Image (cartoon, rainbow, N blue to C red; front, side, top):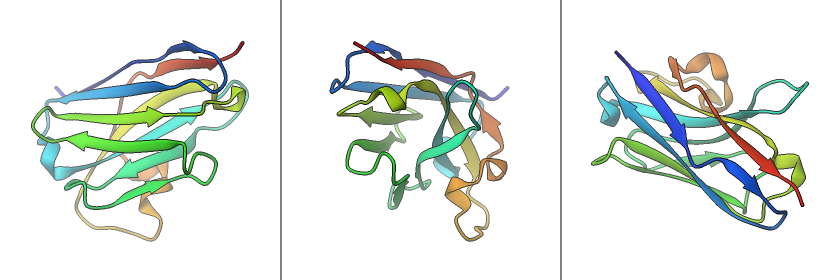
Length: 128
């Protein structure tokens, strides 16, 4: 059974930092690209960041570039999202997702439909 379990969310003041983790089990983690998406109340789910199976390439949305960093540890089957300089607009449920690294289309990393497995999400609230 494939499981993606996010952790590390919470309440933080503007300008603060959080590190999200996503622990993956039930699949060959090294063969999967990983992504982070988020969904704010009343809005569609949007791409945040992605990393290839080997970690050799990363992608981040323009809205978080320079503030968020995605990384992975293939020995721990875990992907991370370091979030710095948080803003109220970053408030959302954050989801991690996995896609089998077999074939790529243009801008694959930002397309939710490219991912095969999803976690349940972790709430991030940025507020003073």
